[in-house]
Length: 223
Image 1 (tube, rainbow, N blue to C red):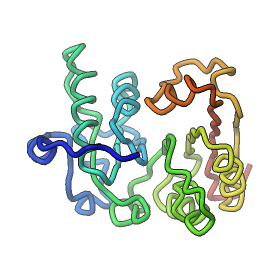
Image 2: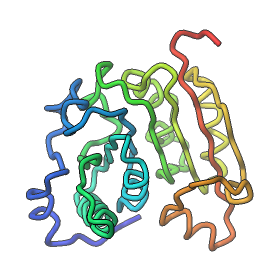
Image 3: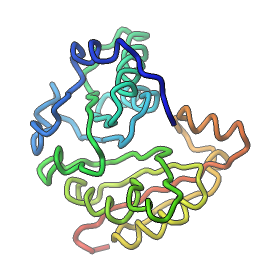
């Protein structure tokens, strides 16, 4: 989805206390970047930030990292985080936004970061076969996440795209993740505390069913 550039983006990000423009400098030490050490969850492709803003606000016991490549998206995410926290006059101390090409995620994360959960919401389905390796749920990417995802950690994935979902089921199994839950119609499940993203609402309003899964990483191979 194309998004119009905002002239204010760079200035606001440069002065934002919870934005990091050089994430590679924190590789292996993300726990110490936050003011309080807590479990870390990350969102890959945080977009405009409505999801991570609300998720972080509802879960103050978790530290969240929102990753995107597009500055304009990160600028909008910054504003959305600020808006959610401002309503309750709460300090933003458990969210960090940063810019990174997710295909190169290991430039900013390593085995010492021990992330407990990864969220992937409505990523680009890359429908053409020659582009499938760019999918954030492709086997190649899932192998990268294994480096920093904690043993027993999990990935929460949502999509509107049938083919991406079906292929992703195969990708997760091929990469050695255990799919512990899945649905082909998320909203019929009436999941408690489901945070509806902008894309989720848009696709649902069009009558498109939302597919979702949770995949667990078991590095030891023991049940």
